[in-house]
Each structure stands twice: as C-alpha cells, then as structure tokens.
Image 1 (cartoon, rainbow, N blue to C red):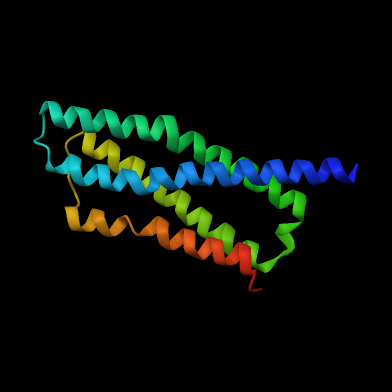
Image 2 (tube, rainbow, N blue to C red):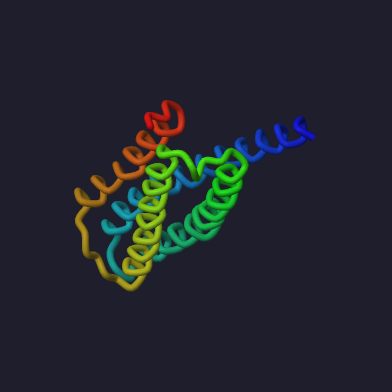
Length: 147
C-alpha cells in the first residue's frame, strides 16, 4: 500500500511540475505579446492576429494549465501534509498572487481586444519580470523550506 501511495505522489509531483512549466511559459509570453500587439495599428489585420494569438494562448495553454497546477498542487499538499508547514503558507500566498496576475493579464488582453491601450511597452516589459521573481521565491521555499 505504501508503495502505491509513493508512486501516486511521484506522478502527482511530475504532473504538477509539467503544468507549472506550461503555465509559466504562458505568463512569460503574454506580456511580450502585448508589447507587439500595442505596436499594431488598431483595426489592422495585424491587430486582429494578436487578438487571436492572445486568446489562443490563454484558452489553450494558460487557463487549462492553471487549473491543473491548482488541482495537482492541492493534491500534493494533502498527500504530504504541507498545510501544517510554514513554508507552504508563503508558497500558497505567492501562487495566489501569481494567479491574480494571470487574471489581470487575461483582463488586459480583453481590454486590448477592445482597443484600450492603458500601458506602455516599457511597463509591459517590466511586468514580464513578475513570474520570474515569483518562480524564484517558490523554488527556494519548496527546495530549502526555510521555516
């Protein structure tokens, strides 16, 4: 029985890592798409292409990956008893913040599709750093478990 639980844990962990990579790739790509999108003339064929690319990135990769990351991550946490560990609480807070960032990006994509361009290219390039910083914090928390 213990061997079955150990194998289940390893499959959950592998799946979680795989879908985190997919999700993070989308979180890095979407703000870059926005930079290029904003350079396209409103109403142009190029503008329509960027709207379609952003919609597909969100719908095919990012939203499904986010859902799987949460399901597998919570299953892992329950399997390992992580809810009782301090490092996990901070990791969970960072993942919640990253999820909020994802939702904000999706809303910004909708605004761009409507022709609203609220941020400049430099601001969007700075936003590209958010997932990298979050990933670094999460990796340190999971590997080092400082508290």
